Length: 486
Image (tube, rainbow, N blue to C red; front, side, top):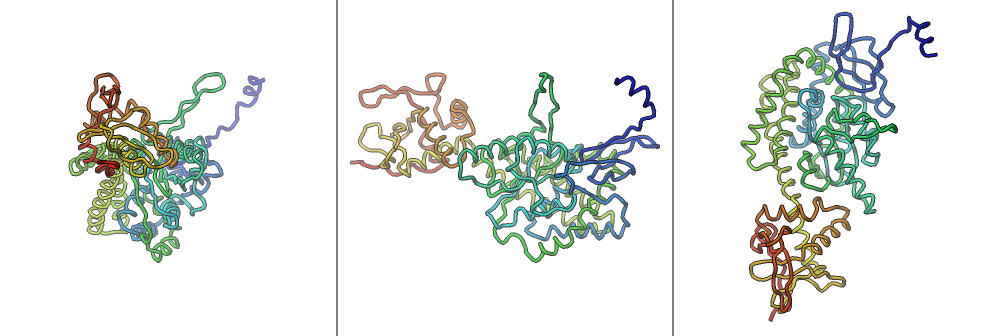
């Protein structure tokens, strides 16, 4: 039957239907041409069919070239977005809008994470940024409540574009809280590694892997836990009063011009794509190395994120000068202020990554449990103790002038349980934690492979983890005061 249909329909019309956004090389009468796919067609070619899923249908850009005056007007409107709040807040968002189309050349391996208290206009600001790609508001965003499969597919289909995932909010149900944390960790790791989850079909052959191909902006009342996750996100904290409401209202009124600004920018990019292919990756590497030199000790991923965002900002400003929306002097000033704003944000994120170190989390929770009386350490001579006094207190070990002697498993389990009760989780297994404690000179190397020491307590011999008390105090402060001392 199939052969008969093929023989009798030799003149069948072939159509290419694209179901994603972003750059694509297509065949036309003059050979291959690079075009940018949008929900309503292709910038740079006619007769190209794009059929996005209904949830993606707002991604629509003007297809007809605008006059130079119209391009300049649209770009000036886009630049005024930078005035809606502090440059430390608006510069990364604006840069992200102009970085996303460069993902084929400089893949943004981080998530831009906008967080703050409810009512600080996080979703509104993210939606305004997204208006560069179409007609959006804060009700038209993807949600962290969507399934991780759905979000992975969206990140794949929205190639060379922004995607906003909204509302990472605290959950009162511990199960829902852990599920949201897992989903966020999955998406952040996918973005950071440009990876997707491998799947098998029913016949056990490999299914297609959906890797992220754009730039993800996330919003929430908080950011996800874990040092490895924190290193893959660039956080922007939004505080009450940061957004200028009058300027926000004005920006929303002219957001209809943002798609024209981006469409003009895309046309400008396509004209010099070969040149950018040869030069941009090396420029970003040089910026990354410069950032590492000035931000000593920072996690290696953060200077790369800074460099990538600056590249987006730099090219956006270069285009603004090219169409007459900005003078070269004004662009130079904005570049300098933008670099400082991005550097300030990177420094703040570096501090957050540092606070998420598993060793610090472990020690901070331990000190907190002792201070609240939910856990207890006994002095080795038995004449005093630290902590305790609360029903259900847990005994976790001993101490003396120089060391803490912790029961490894019980202490780890108590710390992990405390975090679970708070809707968080401890990011590493117990043996990995011990390794990190040794590397940071907190845990003294023990006599066995598990780094435990044999100690005498009264008439008994016990095995315990021996922590340097001075080093603990250096990192997280002194232990709570003794009780019961004579």
